[in-house]
Length: 217
Length: 422
Image (cartoon, rainbow over all chains, first blue to last red; front, side):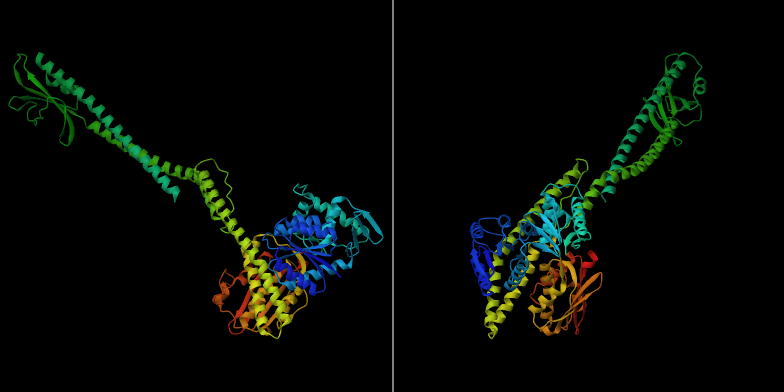
């Protein structure tokens, strides 16, 4: 039985979503304030958190950052127009987002997909690659390497959002914050990662999207 | 054109200066020469008088001295005594200009005293000054000629100099023309700190004000959107649950359909209002077939042809596009079973056709159907197709329409295939 937490200040919306999820057979908890949500997430374990970006007491991105070390997937609800905040949300640990107004069926469908992905495996896997957070190591079949910090961060970001395109600029911004390093750093990291994976007989999952960036598929 | 106007103004003032200068030079020269001639005349006349008073050398001396002199001894009765038979010169005590036989002469007179001391009449002397006049004409001609040359030269120079001087203005105008009204970017002007720079600064201030205003409006719209989004989601969600529970009651079904309609239209409006079309898309590799199946499920009865086709797209946005096209087609023919989604793919391009057997669209409307707020539906804003077109453009694809009145329409989304990027 999957446990879901809804952090949403609009009571009607929260109770409707909660009702639908309950109908679908999930256990649901609701918090209308960010602090309350964080407290609940601290004291209980959830599989998925539906998080509203616009809360009266805290910024949604901040909450997502604080929740990111929990094992729960985060699905963000946003009424904000700027993609910027969503991208931030994705980097802050959210695995998906929906823009308000949304149809409940679509929200439920997304939640099902997220939970199904989770139930397959707890650690980050893609093809025959397996990333272990605790030891910052990459396992391919019987091989295991400890990756340098930034390479690990890069691979984790790509693997946790398979099929999603990341531009070089976005990756740089994520890895280095505002401080931009040399122009081809990301290329070098990707080159190193690909070489390691190839040498260990791993699947060639990091794809270059011509003129746009990289994605894992 | 400003360049020619400024040049003309310059030439005009130059011409005025030349004329004034020429006039001054001419009158100065004239007065100087004439004054000199007058002094000659008076001196010679006095000499003649002295000679006549003291001896009898008389006229011959004067005649041989200067060829352009005419000397007359006139009696008190006004008759020319020497030389006989000549017409009498007019009488002036001080040198005066007169015209004799169409020639200009300076004429002056002194009393003709005999050595005895008696006054016999008057000595009259005329000096031909036509040379002064001729020189004056030459002077005038050369002045006019040099004026013409100066004007021509000034015209050429001023035009080419003004062209260079006005280049910054031209540059600024080009930049101002290129400003996108939807997204007024500030102009970058790096010319000298003159009037043009002042203009550029003023323009920048105006643009900044417009931008500020636009941003404020956008923020207000986003605020309104935020207020509307939650209740709309609740209404649509609850009605959909109710319609599911009481599917025998057509009122719930109708209410749910209307609420969904409202939901999707507001998504379109908000897409425009939030300025989302100006932001980068969050792209992912996805199957257009999945989106087509999802939308076909929302409109039961719509047929689906084709399996899967991978593209690089934003799932949310591409769903919105396909949904808008299907919704439009269903509204056009009133029945879902007359609408078909067809998926086609080659290595470079993926095509999704939405085909309906509705009334079709005439040629006039076909050209305008993707324009903002143009709709064949009375009262409708037509915003769905506008948003669809813009979103497809944003995906580096194209949205086209083929239609024949009476037979139906076919909207086609063409997107680069995922393969073409890898």
